[in-house]
Amino acid sequence: MSDDENHPSVEPSRKRSASALHSGPRKKATSSNPLVLHGRHFGRTVFALCNYPALLTAGILRLEELQDSPIENYPADVRREHRVFLELVDSYPGLLDRLTNGEDEDIIHVGELMGKGASEDRHLYRLSPEISSLTSGFNHEVTGALLCPAGLDWSNVETKQNLKSGETAVRGDQWPMFLYAGYVYDPEDPWTGLLRSEILIFGFKHVFTSPSSVDREPKATRSGNAYLHGMKSVTKASLAYIATQAW
Image (tube, rainbow, N blue to C red; front, side, top):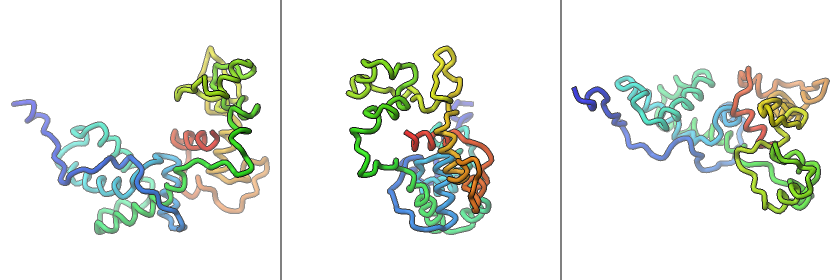
């Protein structure tokens, strides 16, 4: 038997468009619909840049195809996309039944609602008019120390000047000091204290429990986002989201 017979190629029932794990057009979120709120939470905690209508449409079609061909026969990018799809439908009770029993228009509508919620968090908070770029980032003594890459000495005049001028380019694999507990970096053990700083902890509480939970005596009278969406543990995506907002 030939290799082709042992490993049949996958022929999707419809022509695939661009990956659903790329953000679609932005739409302003103006609704408090539960699907909108869940899309926002999913973007914060699982995957931020989904094209939700495409993700749901492709996922439902793929469920039918998987009855004849295992997911292992698909390319790596499709397997990854399908994992995100499964996480999405598993995170919202009744969503899969609604999608499989509805019309194509229903799938698109659900995806658009979720996309509205997620699109709220696709941009960083902009500086207010009172805050100039000349007095923030590396141009400010305090924020500069927090943004300084671990392993560099912010107190060194030359290092500080090179960061301010851009002569020293910060690589994507250089962790900033504000990610470390006590803002202390141990070059002998770079994992010590990583992602345990007060900035991240307070930011996480502010977003996922309530702003008042940052204080010693919480004063919130409503359930926080974590409770409302059944979030019981910290996810990698939620840490990345908070770190991005803090940055």
